[in-house]
Image (tube, rainbow, N blue to C red; front, side):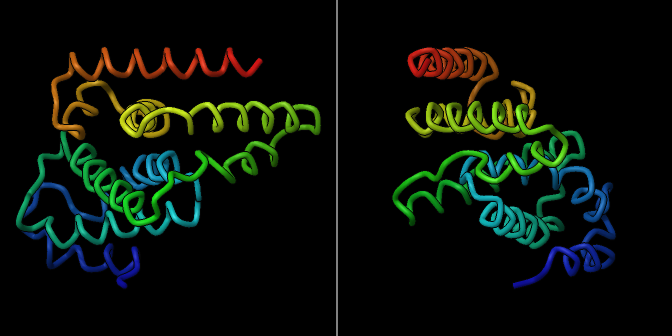
Length: 182
């Protein structure tokens, strides 16, 4: 496999005619893509692999596609969404959401705060795992990847209004499940 660093160094030949250099695309959007991948697979190491594969595929298609700088993040997240869907098809089960991200919060908090955050994360992960795949994707794109409804609509291939309603309903179902756990 090609490393992300190799992707960045290859941009000079790939993006000569593109308005946005691929290394800029990577720098600007790698965090969103990675957070989305983590929200979908629940394993930071696997999310890194999916993020890597997303940018590898994006680099391979970049010269041919020439994505608009305004929508390049949506394009990348659509690739990541397809890869995570493929992963779930091959694995059969969706992994727990955000496993391991609690370590980041723990590094900055006292013991009581860490204990509460872990409990909250476990509750949220368990509740999220009970939702359907579409609900998990909508919540992942809205919350973990921090996309606008317009950007989610582009990734999901539907209208912005449908996304708004579906995301509201998914979050309502998540809240209800969290209340049931109390």
